[in-house]
Image (cartoon, rainbow, N blue to C red; front, top):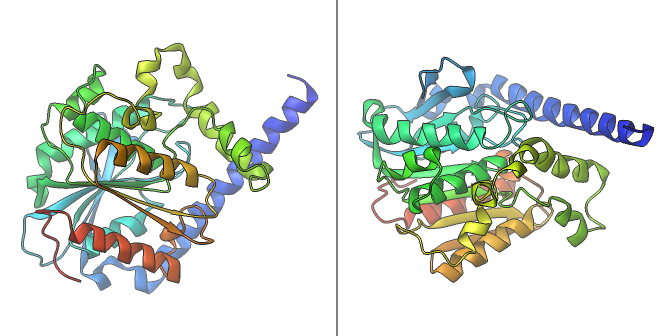
Length: 331
């Protein structure tokens, strides 16, 4: 590696550390505020439960559920974002709390992270979590037949992979275990997602004046740390990383694809992926609602005190209220 390559590698590592520290720190500070105490919102939290028998911290989940709500509750499987490389269920407590306040029993999961565990490790883990929820939701007062899948950023990608696995009979054993549950989500909520992990340079090509070096590094890291080793496999297996390719293909689904709610800001470098997925779903005749929020950055809806974030959640609530049979209480 030459001097230029070494400097680039150091710049990317430093940038990744800054991003990790910022989001983790912001999450920890938020949890210290009295208003974020789940009990204040009528929510209980059971932490560090296991969805496999591996004993690994990466295979744990937190359960958020409303107190004193008659069950069984609709279930929601939440998959955190973080470029497949950073963050955890603990950093994403705001989503578990937010959805539990709306009447869900929320299974907020960890999964193995790149670069130590590249694709398909994360997909394998979320599929195992899906199977766990399908088989054991009733033990936690939840109804697996009213299952919603949700996540943001990289978690949105993994959420879309679960939708593929649930609705298309595939060869990968981890995808097959989802399909074999015969549980199809009633809705999918993949927010500000990356739905094609390969060719991250496309964002720079399409928006060259809006993607600076810091963002370009983060986007390229997604592909290089998560996907590159998988290129030794057949393209067929990459479909669960590039989920857009499945929905944009001519292959018919083996089960009805659930309705999608896609929310993203105009200042988000991943905006085009949500637009492309929305178009692919509509071409299939799948109900898809795309909401684009002016001037909002990536994952802005996590900052729930902001007016735009509140609007996002209101729009998402309205979408969920139209999902047949979900049975959420009125807010």
